Image (cartoon, rainbow, N blue to C red; front, side, top):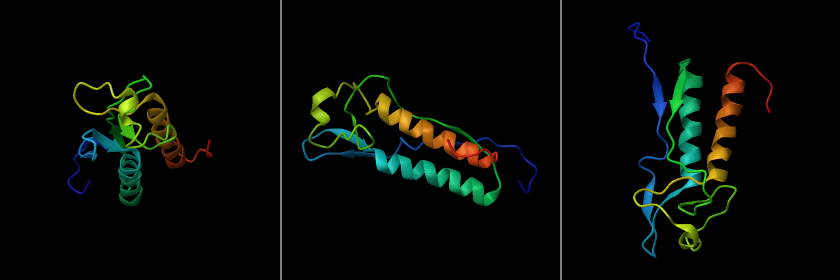
Length: 115
């Protein structure tokens, strides 16, 4: 901002939040993803800059690849519908939960009332 440059700040809260469970599944914890996304908005609120975008790895399918969130996937239930050929994705419920978090933060930034 000081240099007068226009940049687009993007968060990729799914990338880098990967861990391996005791039973060998590669997964991501929803709470860590949500925390990183909240921090992204907090920093922009503090700095007066604009959060330009968010990248998420997700599917609309009811998979069990990332733990936590409203779907309450645990390390023990990952095996039920673990379908990824590569990296674990948020399922539809987890993705919607993050979408509402993003919408809420964007509403607050523009002065609109909470949902």
